[in-house]
Image (tube, rainbow, N blue to C red):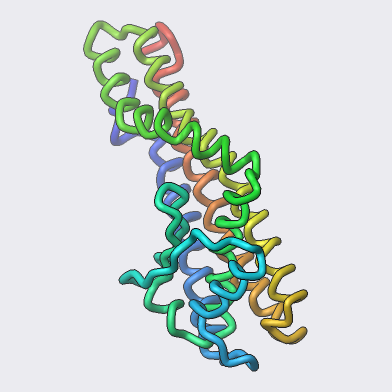
Length: 232
């Protein structure tokens, strides 16, 4: 068997990194493009988020500003919507779209959206699996190639891929909710909605890229360590 870190299958890891880098560059460039477009309404990302929450009848979610760029997130544990510096006070079309997307997650939580429940439920197990997968595989290799341990390690890493697959419908649905609300509530004009769609589509592609990258890493683990006694 080739060395774990330097072998022909390492090209899969490189391919995954390239895919992720391209997706990240695309979302950043798209956001910057539409961050230059001021919304006709003149509302900020924070104001748009609050308006959408109020419209949905959600009164227990707080909005706060956090450091960073595109670090926006919704925490269902403490019911906090965190908007990054590039979103909170910005009146750009891009910022309003990102804020609306995060509110989409709050609405999912409020309405009991099933994929979000599943993702939240499996997160602790996924976190354990991602941290222990490589140590378990290494121990299995050191113990005279204990295939049972190696397979457990591979399955533990596969939990990450499962989590990311469940994340896809959560993110796509949040974006769809955001677009519908922005369009129907008149927070953006008909010309501005397609701009937001471009931003949210670019952001969604980063999650697709993450799935592809993790799949390639999992494939590499199977090729390297899933061969049973074939270790030459």
